[in-house]
Image 1 (spheres, rainbow, N blue to C red):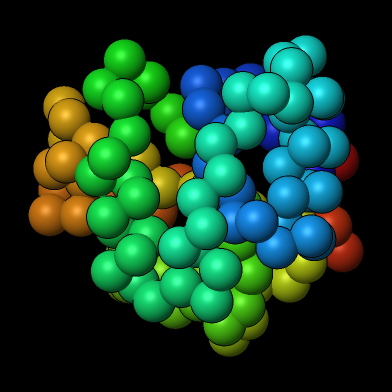
Image 2: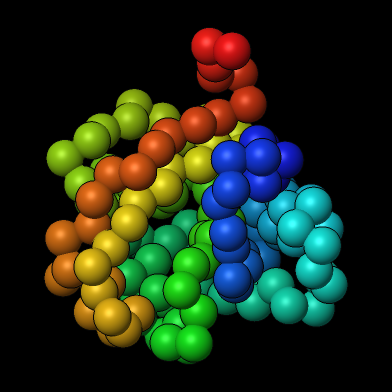
Length: 130
């Protein structure tokens, strides 16, 4: 999935992960593919079994020097969070799925109220037209 993002021109400035083994392992795979050191992954213990508000609080606390962020977490919280962002709904975020949005916010603290717009949804078993 990280390679797909790179090939599509997606940029990730910061990587934030739950301490859960699978989420953190996925974050490490992504950051390596993006050519960055593992030490840049920000571990947020509160993302373990997080409610939507915890995701919003985590994002609100990001450094405004970053233009993009990847949040690595797990179900059911990550699906609830993805579904809170736009009118697009997913039944379940599969392992390693990416639900991407764009935001007009100029500060991360404004993200939750900014009216994020759906960008794309992708996951490992998704079929793509060539």
